[in-house]
Image: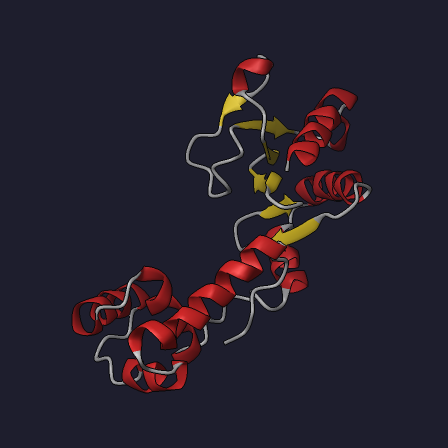
Length: 190
């Protein structure tokens, strides 16, 4: 199974614990589970997850790990540069994100977690994230939305629940010193 790139140390330990506990707690190796998974009559991932749970009692995380080993997804997890290129296609959103990336990567110990829908920035925990929007970028921040009238509640954003607010950015100039301060504060707490 390809390992996701851009994981924090805590996330790496979590993935390892799921892997290590599989054989210890089920009595079957990952290879044995992969053989069973390949017998699944379903072809859609969610239906395969349900089948693994119903037929073999595996929970969501372990079933996902087994299915990803049995049927490696073409998600790009192991190629974050490709994911980023596919995500940041619009010239405006790319320019905003490049400035954001430069600001964030100037901080020490930053882990970039590239996902299909967004780019996450973590230290030990996620402290900000960004995704393209119709007219720029939506920036997720670990700041209470009541801190600033420009901040909005996070809504249904796909990133960490630690990111409490979002801020629309329409140009690189919207990354003001105030916004950069919010990013740095989040980094310090992460």
